[in-house]
Length: 170
Length: 108
Image (tube, rainbow over the protein chains, first blue to last red):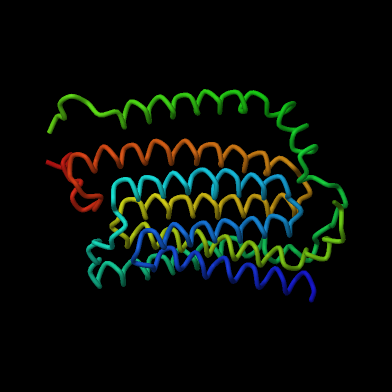
């Protein structure tokens, strides 16, 4: 089985599980299918030789963010599907809008898609920990430090927001 | 690990289509769903589609810089999920629901 067939199968499975995230009524099932989608996206990263990002995707997204979603969903006891349905007009117009967006994006990226005939393969391992680390700590060291400030701000904000106050202003 | 992955070039355009499809699915979910937590998950899906597109073009051009940008997008997504979920907890305490149709207090 060639790599192209494998990538087509994995890409189709990614799209299918992403559709299940949106279409399933149960929020818990949405979370589970989102984790499955992240694993498939990581497999696509591995196919493109970006091993570091594949591992980071699994650890950060499937490991940390999705567990946070599951915790909130279960602690608030929201795992029942009491969600009111959107009206059929909203669904239809959203479908039209999403399909239009898909067409516009495909048309905009058509030229770049057709460029893949001139693709020049390189044997350089660019997705490894060594290559990315060299770049991250030399050229992009200032954004790296700024992102730590962003993390501290997000942490303080989350603690302040989720802390129960004595009186809730209504 | 430099295996013979170079004949993947013909399927890179397929990855572009996959990432566009993921973005559109996320946008469709944001437009139709009313559960706020599912909305946040659809935003995560859209961020991931952008990551996939960046990695595809990184492979295509043989440059490592887009993968560093993907790293920063993951950082921003983690911060966004944290703050969004704490806002959701606050809203749930006030309204006892996470239906976005009920969060119209700022309107009037």
